[in-house]
Structure formats: structure tokens, C-alpha cells
Length: 535
Image (cartoon, rainbow, N blue to C red):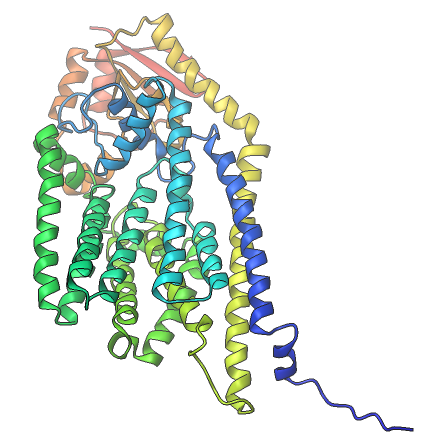
């Protein structure tokens, strides 16, 4: 009888079977693809949602898009009727407004405008994910399977702000593609004519990101600082000139359209003041922050410090480390202002996973001689990262699914009821009170209570972005509202809509007294009270 020689299964055996790099990446690819498909389906559901504010006060952005569709000025002096503030730079508004005009959508078709903005964001997010795929595949030469996983994750991990009718998606698209072309510039420095084309494209996209949303300003600064850091004087001089030329072109064009109102809106409109408590509660304290931002931050910090990537890598590796530091630093500084959210770290998150995929997916990383004790440690590191990634994909997708289930299925009747109440208020003013084009309506309502009333009455609404006034005017005295007081006295504002309970923020000290002296209650609809000017 031949004796059977048994051998204990080692970590190396497991690595060669179920947990080999090939098999583990197959598992990750399957999970990421399933989550991607799930997210695509959920994105289309939310695109047609009746929810007027998925996140980020969509109603404000939609109001400005309505204004542009109607052919009115996108930016006006906030201190005069209708006291509007278009908070962000214009490219996203223009994109949605032009699309609506091409589709012959009227400014009064509020729901269709929401669908247009949200559908555009799906497309923009897919293009951004494709740029992440190209960075991994073409720049860092990762195997195709890993690059595909990176692209899928880039779509799955986006914050809910990208679901909404907001300019974040367009800004992120420009920034990530700008980074991709800047990588190409660094790769082709020896070919001067080609490299300058890549640099010009990167700078143009970086400047375009500023005119999609002001926070895009970080990326041209990061580019120029890196060129200084690497003592690329020629690139720095040419890049600085290109930045100035492109920025001047955009700015002068929009200034010629809107004059000083452009500056008043895009600078004064985001002057929200600093709040450490808000940063701790709404940014660091947000549910996604620990898993989606903080843990990746720890991982990339470990990688950069261990490999001294900022100083010893290739130009592309050094820029990736430098870019991550810049994106994280900018998000942290701007995250201190009122109204900030964890979504500010979205660009950092994109690039953090590029470095993580590169470090743990590259064959040259953690390479050790077979049989050494480091073999198991390196294997465990990889398994830990891929397990964390799959868990994060699943948690993120399930979290979004729960939001969809709660809002769009269980809460469908509630959304329909809210929408009906909003239009009941609007129709009462338009039909029963014969609201005329020049008569103004002030909705003294919180974001939660507003429910799209200003959008339903956009041609007549004043101070439609009331919480921006709250943040900008009250703490920093950015805007004054003497004209608002006068409009209440002389009846330019003919109607006031209050909620029960009344919104706690009072736009001026005289508001309650002026309402009492000049207006009378004419109708209650649900928890809304409608007051009419009587003098």
C-alpha cells in the first residue's frame, strides 16, 4: 500500500487557486459590473423622479435654467427685482437651456427640464468614467481588466450631487479629462510640438472647468504648481500664458453678456462664510465620508510615503501624487465654508482609486522573491484591498438602492401629493387671483417647504434662492435689500407665500411688520398661507 503524504494548505496554495490575482480580479470585475448596471438603472429612475430636490437644492439651478430658456438674462444684480442669484458659472446652465430649446421644451415645463439635466449628468458621468479608464490603461499601462474595473468604479462611486440637476458633473468631466491630457503632456515632453498640443488641451479643459463651476479653479493651479515643482520653466511659462488667454476669453465673453452682474453672482453668490461646525457635521460627519474618502485617503497616504512617489517616481507618478495632495487640500479648505458637503472630495476620490489600482494592480509593486515571508504579506494586502473595494461597491449600491426604494417606490404617493400641492398653490395664484406677468410673488419658505413653488411661478418669483441670501447676505453683508423693503411697501411684490410654521429666516428686519401692515391673508392651501397686497 502506498502511503499518502499530506501537506497543509498554505497561503501560497490559496493564492494559486481561488485567490490568485487573475481570479480575484475576475470577482472584482463581476461585482463592479453588477453594481454598474444597478447604478445605471437607478440613475434612469431618478432622472424621471418627481423629487424636486434629490440633493444640493436642485430647484435653484432649475430656476436659472428656466430663466435662460425663456431668453432672460442668466445673471442679474441680486439687489434689484427679481433678486435672483445664479450661483455657478454658466456652462452647465447653457448646456441644459440649449438642449431644452432644441427639443422645443418651454420654460414652464418644469419636470422635463429636470429630466434633461439629470439625463445629461448620466452621460457626463459615463464620459468621466471613460477618462478614468484611459488614465489607467494608456497612462499607467494597467491590464485591461483592471482599467475596466477602475472605469466602472468611477461611475458607481459618484456622489448623489451628480444625480442632480447641478453643474458638478460637467466640472468633474472637464477636470478629469484635463488631468488625462496633462498626463499625455508629461509623457510626450521629448516630442515638443506634440506635448504642447496636449498641454494646450489640458489647460483649455482646466479653464473650462472654472466656467462650469468655480471650484474648477483648482486644476489650472495644480498644473502650474507642478510645473514649478519639477522646474519645468518652459512648460510653466507657456502654461501660464495659455491659462491667461483662455480664462480671459471666457471671462470677457460672459462679462460682455452680463456685465458686473456676472461677477456679483459667481463670487458673491458663493461667499458663504466659514463654519468649522458645519465641516465637522456635514462633511466629516456625513455617512459616506469614512468609507469613500477617509479610508482611501489613508491608503494613498501610505503609498505615497512608502514609495516616496512625489520625489522618486516617473513624472506621471509624481504628478499623480502631487495632484492628489492638491485635490485633497483644496476640498478641505473649501469644505470649511457654509453649505459644504463630503461631495467636495469627489475629484480626490476619482484619482485616489487610480493610484490604488496602480499600486496594488501593477506587477512591479510589492514584488518579492517566492518563498519569502513577504509573499504572504503582499498577497494579503492585495486581497484586503480588493475585498474592501468589493464591499464598498456593494455598500454604495445598496445605499443608493435603499434611497430609491424609500423615495421613488414607498414614497411615490408622497411625492405626487407634494407636487399636487405645489401646483395647487401656483394655479390658485394664476387662475383664481389672475396673476399678471408683472406681479411678483415672494415665497418665504425653507428649502424643504419650497417644493418647486418658485419653479412653478418662475416668471413671477422673487428671491427664489432664499437660503443663498441667508448664507451670503446675513453673515457677510454681501448683498443689501433696501429695494426688497420698498417692493413690499409699494406692492411690487403683490403676494407672499408663508408656510406653517413660518420660515425662521427673515430676509429683512421689517418683514413681519410690512406684511402685517400691507398684506392680508386670502387663502390657505394645505400648510401654505397666501397673502395679498391690500394698499
